[in-house]
Length: 410
Image (cartoon, rainbow, N blue to C red; front, side, top):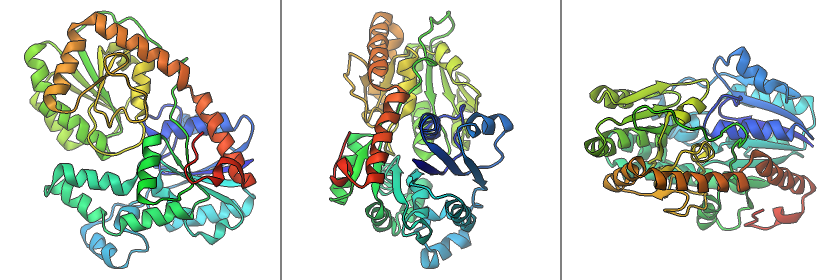
């Protein structure tokens, strides 16, 4: 097959979060198929480009659209070609590059990774005769609604309310127009079908490099709790601030020498303010390799309260032998067995209590870490996920098989 990926953020070997899914899909599909990539990107390094370019027949990059000011946002409500939330990634240059690529080479299938760039597949006459697959990492309408419900009428909540304008109808009409929709979890599939029955959906799970993320014995040091994320993505920012301001003070009262690591790209002003108030909180910013931070950590937390999809960070922690405390939403898509391979909690008090238990009870922590590692090795290698994706794509291109079922899951 000739496969073209259109992605919101440039995927490379060192990236974290959703783009690492895309990198590994490109990497493993390229072993048997001809793969190309069209991505938004802002100044990737030569090393980042080289880590993925060798897998590609064609690679084209487009600058991110400029941030839209207040006046432009007001105009978007009236005359924008797509709802305000999708205008964040609306680019005529992206349409033009896509047109050039499909005219230069006859692709069998085009895959949009993240619904934000699925708009380039939606009713696009340049893609006539090419199968269109929309890989949904989270439902934006549901995500923005959760942000509004969590934040209410503060600044973040009002921005989410603005972004909800016209979002539901456009997003679900877009999915209905696709030849196939992919979700990362059965829960994500069921959420979409509850809102638009009849969508053609397959579940293609996240994965982790179990040969790279390995358990390593920690060599002393202060008790350490870790969270990982791309913080421009609001669910990650919210989780870090929520944990640092509401959960961490409870933990510190019980474990005074503990420290909290918030690892990842793009820490926000409110995150830095939280860290300034407590020197035991360390904000790393973007790092070349997250594995050393897993090796420093005694507990990994995933206190997300909004968003959707699959948190690959949880798989990486499990593969690294670090026991996990998570909200139910943070563990979505993982066959979590509380007390066996993970601890689940929701309120600040419950999250603090679970984290303290693992910091103090090393036998419990070791047992949970061991069971979680076994789960990840058995079910979540990248190769297994890409095998599922490959089969789905082949059925879409042939126009038969599970792709004809509204709720297909492989």
